[in-house]
Length: 168
Image (cartoon, rainbow, N blue to C red; front, side):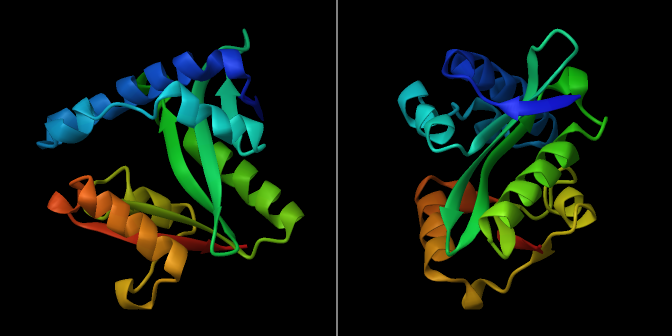
């Protein structure tokens, strides 16, 4: 797999990857997550414009996975990482996370952060294997608290969620 910056003309394809990747939530009783629409193209466009969007591409330069990030509390925050099911379980997500870690180090960021479902096997347990640890909710910095508040308002707290951090 090769990782490169996202091109603006690929944004609809990223939405398709996220929709396909989300279908596995249906199988574990979370159809609302499977049906949740990806970010609109206008919102998604701000990530490549900020230099915070990458794709993993196959041999024909077609994206099979992507990662977008924000700067939150002095760290780089994983806003979304999605791998198409046809390319899952091959280390593609970890490659994207490691690429983000390298980028964060080059910016002098001390850590990566993310929010995730704590009891979904390909969420918190997966991220723990990638070097992230759960944070105490009561000790979150302002930016992460605001993200969690937005997630709760969107209904994501219907299932256990948490914030995680990977030191760099």
